[in-house]
Length: 259
Image 1 (cartoon, rainbow, N blue to C red):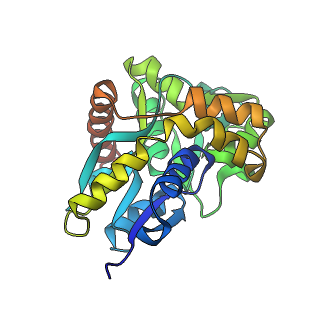
Image 2: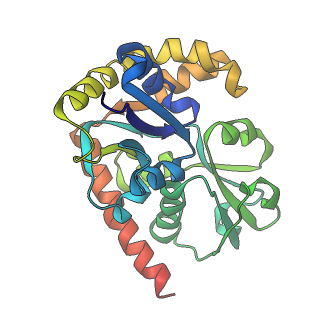
């Protein structure tokens, strides 16, 4: 009997339409879901714990031997409402920024924005803990996901990084893409997964009702967030935006390495 397909994906509200679609349209004996923070999804596909994974866009430059599923992603056009730079002073007065250990994509994005949009040099810091305790005076912090949503009213300045990216480029933003290891996944399994993921957008409202309380978020917010803010189709515009981000990220990382 073939082993179940090991699928790693993010343990946040924004992926619940994907998890609900998988659980509704694929027999439970066929899959094993690994719910992880974004950065760990990339590690799981890299070290072989997962056969398929929803990985942060910021990890793609470091992965090899994988293929991208071309039709599905986690994306947004304009403000997404869950990926922020928080501060008690405006961005031009920040001297230090703490990055979020959960998110390589957003950490890379904020460096791109400081370089190309805000044109400001800051000191980058990272802790094993989320950045909230560090955000004070001239120190800002990047935070993503459900905990970031719950903290958004605690800071004087809140920058939605997806909205800021749109200001810089005019494009939507792609936070994560589905990838797989071709030697681990056969064509039947891929077709089965594609069929399930295709139902995700239609499940957003039901997922909001089902999961909002679990994440400590109001049902009204969850419905707007999953139905209007998050986007699950990896269309041609998002493919272009995704490649633009990867190019800017490589340039930013080279610049950081030589600074």
